[in-house]
Length: 70
Image 1 (spheres, rainbow, N blue to C red):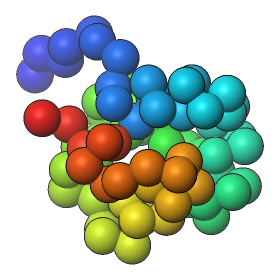
Image 2 (image 1 turned 90 degrees about the horizontal axis):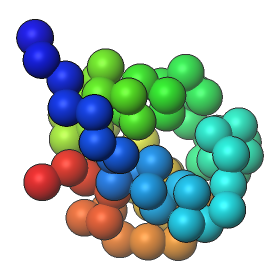
Image 3 (image 1 turned 120 degrees about the vertical axis):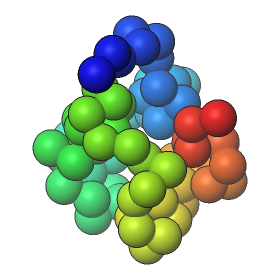
Image 4 (image 1 turned 180 degrees about the vertical axis):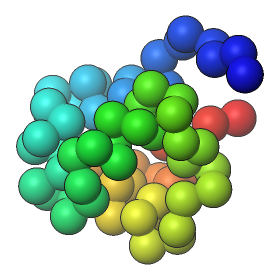
């Protein structure tokens, strides 16, 4: 399986918000390891539970479409 080494939209939004992965985890209630997996492409954020994506988007102050990968 080939991974594309581009910055994920989640990582881009998190960095733009000036947050570390740990800060996002604390603010969203999503496990930091899961955030790492989404950002690294180990797990597909587009297949995440709705509640997880909503929590991340809420913590980042953005729409869910801004963190899902195209």
